[in-house]
Image (tube, rainbow, N blue to C red; front, side, top):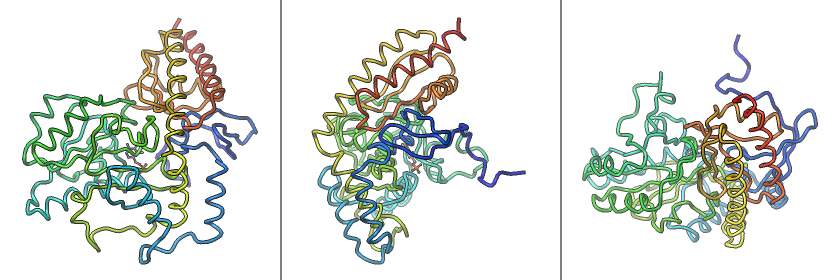
Length: 393
Ligand SMILES: *Cc1c(COP(=O)(O)O)cnc(C)c1O
């Protein structure tokens, strides 16, 4: 017997019927405080009134026409992204994985057009996650994601996370690109320090390699800047975006500098759905809200408040927690107890969190989570950890 839904997920026995802000209502009518936000997707909370209004109005007008035609909503969102970032041009996808695929293709095309078609090596980092396509799993390279799916797409090499010497030894005039998440999400909320990001930019410039950032999870205001790399004061050549940009509608994008994208001419790439009017209308509203400096200042204030409370939580439960890590509202609790136990204990307190690698529990709330919900979340985490303290004793 196989279930009607392909059984590739280990799901919690919970189903939700409605959401509002940072709260979800389960089938039995009980309410859960949501610190997962659909894995950093519902950046403005559930059923955000401004987004509901935009998607409803657009749904009544026009959903999809395909990229055979100009799409004004797409042009508008692209212009907003170009104006707010390093990028000169944008391609829209429906997911982070598709953004990763195009980023990889863009790197290969760039070198091919430059007369170096063999320059295909992309340096990645252990613990990386770029999606589940054949290209993206080859980039991540982990046993967990690649087992049984060989032969893998060639051209990727994984270096130890944050290892300067390994990078220095690996990068050369044969390197096509370096690709990484400024803050690893699935890998356990591992922040690459600003000085490392600057060093990577210099190392790429020295050999002419492209720098590709995956900001699918850490972008769109999550760390308190519109994009995480802005903290380091450097710019990538190519960047993938998804998750938060659609606020819950499937939307992704590849942003690129003119030079990096120069070979992507008509016919070199495409997508039937990517950049449709419905998704782009929502994305433009999300951008309008999140890119506002006053909104980002609030994210930083909330993040400081949350972090301070979490430090207290960790100190109160030294057998359960090791440390708080992360940036902005992309937070991780590095656990001593098994992280799955904490996620489960939190379900018991009607609190939703997300596990990650490295025995971390991720806290990825809506960026506009009210202060009182932050306090309530920490109180629930405290009770959840309390049940594990008792186990440890
Ligand atoms: C989620 C994620 C992806 C893949 O995005 P999908 O929308 O699931 O295809 C890629 N990179 C990072 C950093 C992610 O967090």
